[in-house]
Amino acid sequence: MPPAERRALVLLLSLAVAGHGVRLIASRPGTAPGELELVRTLPGQSPLAHKDSTIALASPLDPGERIDLDRAEAGQVARLPRVGPGLAKRIVADRDASGPFGSLEGLDRVPGVGVSLLAAIRDHVSFSGAAAVAGQLQSLQAHAPGLVSLNRANAAELEALPGIGARRAEAIVRDRERNGPFESVDALLRIPGIKPALIDRVRQRLQVP
Image (tube, rainbow, N blue to C red; front, side, top):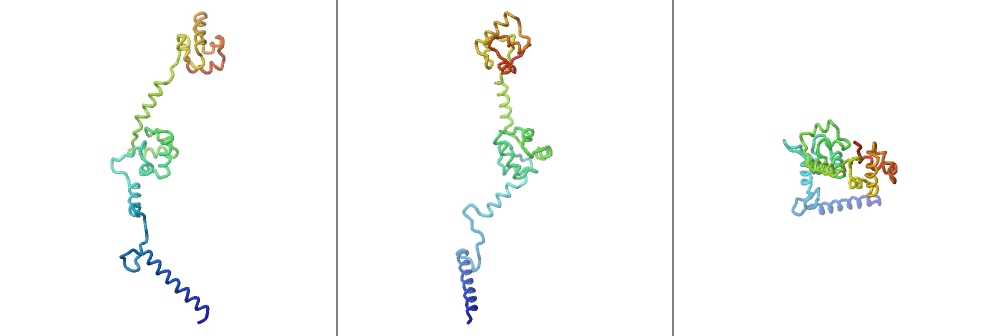
């Protein structure tokens, strides 16, 4: 037999042996010869389980079902009409960074959310963070500094203003008693030690009725 034919025959025999070995490795015990297990998976990670999970996330909402956009994960948010995985991730990222939305108006701050999308999801969303947002606003308002009357406040109230202190507060009261009420906040320049920079600092806290 010529050398070329001999080499070809050896190659064919090698391929046949290799193919038989693959079948022996891939086949499961107890299966018919030639039957292969096409997919091997780790326990709990079967293709069917993954498929079921994907279908559950992609399934349409049930009648009356609502997604809480102040709590839901991106997979659940993506079930909303016209909300894909990308926008769902942006919604969750914005919520994590800036706090709960509290309402559709709050959701509108997310890039990619517009009037038409808000109309499409209006009946399918809820916001459990609304009460929390309202409470935060009320707390901020309760602790927000009020206006101080320049011509009526006593020394203690004036002292509480940033940069005024006890000595300047007493000087303001004495000057007011001697020279009459201040016509404007800028009139505080007549008090020794009060400069324009300090006036600018307290201007938003003072009123001159």
